[in-house]
Image (cartoon, rainbow, N blue to C red; front, top):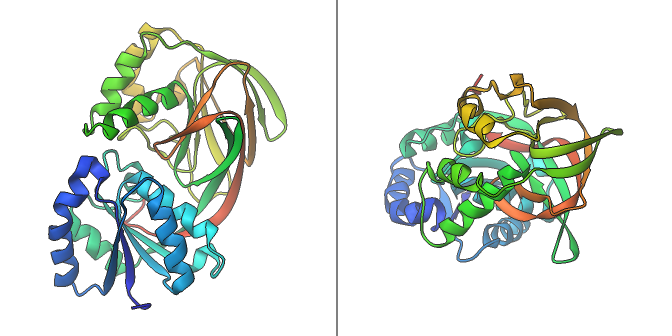
Length: 311
């Protein structure tokens, strides 16, 4: 089966949608004569363990059935294995998550059959990956990511959203609803940020470090991101009032957030962030830890199957 597609299925993705729809997806894979071996996750980070083990056993093609968080775990498994260069493994996706923002960036169809045909077409793109070092429970950790890392308010919203997902709630509008409710108590955080050696001190409301453009279920918070240019695209929202945030929600979706007077944009290969208070971190929609943070870019290190790239 080593010439087969390793198919990693996160049955809890999309609030359990992946588990409910697996029979339909399986039938479509068989209809289109895709040779695959399915492995099912049963806990957090299990997709990472499966990907690492199976690549070391001989697989070099993976289909991810899940959302951005499942793909993130698979990427971390890919970097953990020692048998192949990361670009020697081909990654496809059948998106069954809540936000599917990485899939949106690469124009992967939400229709299962069209997604399978996209995988069979094997139009590949070699994208950058990110690596962030962070703190959690007094220890230092590292995590690879392939879309966006969010800090501050955005990470707070993700944390609240993920708690609700763990309780079985799932909806594309969940992030947006939590954005409104989280505004009530949130305060901007003082931070010292090194961007390729340039030091800036800011009161940070939110900061996104992007390889991809989209997060939060379709928000374009890093509209200038280019997935294979070897640079992070950074959107930093300075201290801003609640009413100002509410008045500019539309800008988060149409890519014009970077035109706002309270927003600064940068590009960088290396970023460090520190804060005297707890500045939270999420990557690819997964809640991780907090500052101090160090980001490095790994240029053109992941081979993915895409549709036509979105503009």
